[in-house]
Length: 639
Image 1 (cartoon, rainbow, N blue to C red):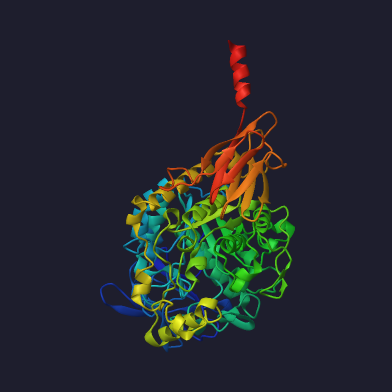
Image 2 (cartoon, rainbow, N blue to C red):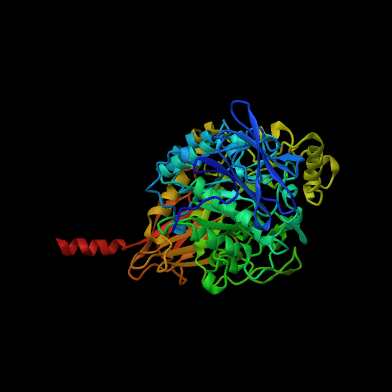
């Protein structure tokens, strides 16, 4: 297999630079070049088949600025620009990826079974708010034990602060975070620590400011389908093959030019495609075909439809993606712990029985009627490995899309948060954490933007009106409490406060996460494989029991009381019975003194039936062991 080569943008080719752009409605395209010395010249591009224009210049080097001139009129940045140093309206800069010296030649990526994801926003993760700032914190993430960071979208956006979902230059890392090589240094440093790097990419819409794709071609979007942002991306209408190619080229660019290990595909439910081969299937096929056999890249969809075909293999008529964000787990936990009932939470009971079913299946809705949507939702997930479902108790959406950007630990008791954290980590589904979750960060994660004034006012108004149907914000005065997305203070208060990690109670929660992650990585019972097994059930309204077991090894039992008090009698059911001739023994609880300065541990009784009496929320982990009388008999025989 030959190495991947770009097909759009500007790249070094021989002794010159190749420019290539798709603009089927244009009669002529010129490259307006500005060299470092201040001189400039014009390179007319040659028209090719299917509306492409291409040409080579030998009078330009890395760092030069350029624009495309369409039909002798508008001068615009390259739709596939690798860097926009002066912002989304400025000239594009020529980047030479070959100048970077990689040290990750032995890195091959990460297997899905070993994935422990840590989602972060570059601008608020560190005090610097840059790629370099993230790189400096990698050692702490290594100590935590996560195996992959997932960067929220990096495509350059208008202004100097944004979640990233308003990106318009999809190939260009946001200049406010650093240069392209700064991003490469971050990825290379992560690989040196055996940490994979995932990237959130947005292929369902572009931001409202600085998006010039439509000026190059009217066929990037189509009125055939509508999305929440207007006309949908053109995946199945006239000239769709070239629009599809643009987005697939973008995925290949991140994977090959930046050594990205996986992509989180934003809102794939908004990528409407009625063609014989769905875009997602083509994307997966082309990404995997571009890789050497020893390189592993994972593709994970964010999709709220609970569609099995997203993650079923191609031979089963699936799209062949490696995983999917399955938010039903989060919603069940949130309703159980916090009692949320607005919006999509109305579809979830939050009782332990439904939560256990969600853990067992990967998602809860498998075709039942949704109260919110007033139609059936979901498909059966039988036979799909549970590691393909990404579960969380927090992520950027589930915090930032709340009116005040409040985290789960702001609302629920610390003991409940510890218990929910344990449930996430013991589940066989792939766990995802949001930055600062591991120490119960006190900073919110608000929605923030930096649009021009006129657009910014509309964004602020729209943000606050979005919550007018929520009980807490029905009155106009109450909506004024919602942070203004355009205010610099909204962005600044969302930054993590790293000094908290070393102070209690944050430090105790951090120790708990480190312990849970280490157990997930080392305990054979918690390893995902074809021969491992899961059994899960509820005991009452608030207690979930999980038993996980690897082949030819003892099981581990997790009994998790998420809220209030309760009693769990073990040994009376098929799940809670210990192996023959053995009894359960507690080896860890989330109320151990090392995790909290005010522990409220459960009482364990084993005279008649092994019983756990919860004085409050707690997760208890048990192993089977030989009864004390057995050890006594062995001792007598030895003597």
